[in-house]
Length: 478
Image (cartoon, rainbow, N blue to C red; front, side, top):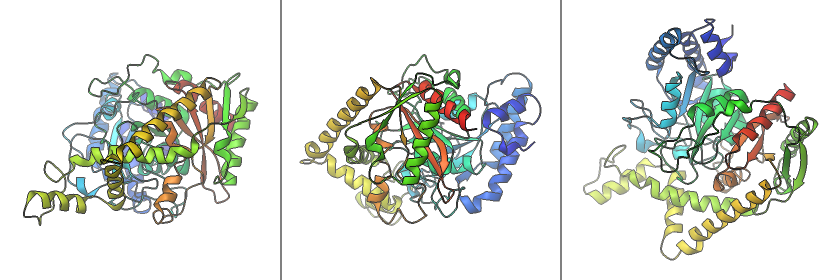
């Protein structure tokens, strides 16, 4: 049995049936990490001994009948911005190079309760700020589909680890497309749930009104299973929702008859690579052939999404990152004689260029005299974007479009032009501004063999509709 080729759900089934064990699966993945990390650099921290010990304990519980769930014994990777008790958590930043949390994020705890084995922490753009996983203090991650190209970001390490078979599934976080875009670039499935569905407790904040944890997996079945596992109402998170409809695996039905799918004309205009456009429209035809009603429509305000997002996200980032001052934890500059200088030098030396750029932008838009002109205006446009989606979902069950304008760019080509990097998020960020769920599903490759992803967007709390459409497409092209 080739353990590494199994999906997470298939592996858990094989462990339950005694065909393999959690220890064997963990060992197989750790060997793959040892073989591939020099090339791909998916991880910041690999907890080899801890993972094997955890796998042994989980295996005993499976054999005793205590753990019977669909993810028991499955090795997972966790993005390095989620706290994990006793394991280094850095946000891929120098300023947290020595931070070891005393607690775990709620989503991680939910995985561990289900019997998942935690392998370690994946590389990411520093503080989740970036779209390529090139702003990490620990170096770049490479795309397993072609190591000359980026894996996307900011959850690039998690997406690359799944694609490189260096884990069976991973958790990422999505502030403006940071799960869906790397999923598209690496040819895996990635989902951002409705805001408030998965607890943000223990997620180191970037943009608190936009951040959401979600799964990166090999297929749609794994995606639904992981989402069902990590979803819970959490009183420790004031934005956490109490939901009754979280049996997401019940939506794994290959049936889209009568489903109304809208394709925004605005998403297929200038700037979209012709190969990406053709692959996404071909995927729409597959769903049409399965009985869905597909039609084009105008989704307004697309042009305003990027300035709105970067104004709000930067403002929240400048506020959230104020706590990293060199006093309580993390990196502290050693060459300062007074407190003010120590603050200044710790932050100057501890943060990378992209993080500093966004903190300064955020401080500017919140400053006296500019607050009304930029931040308040951005909040008003955010409300208009949500209204535009509400009007679209009055007519359609699902909106279908591309995840990114191009396939994965070459390493080094994006960092030279930050604006170009920001424009790469044009199809993903409005979903975060409106708090909606979205899923990226592989739908082909370009002439270079690089993966292309299709994005399905749903109304609030309609993850099941998205899963059904994604699963139908996946089963149709298998």
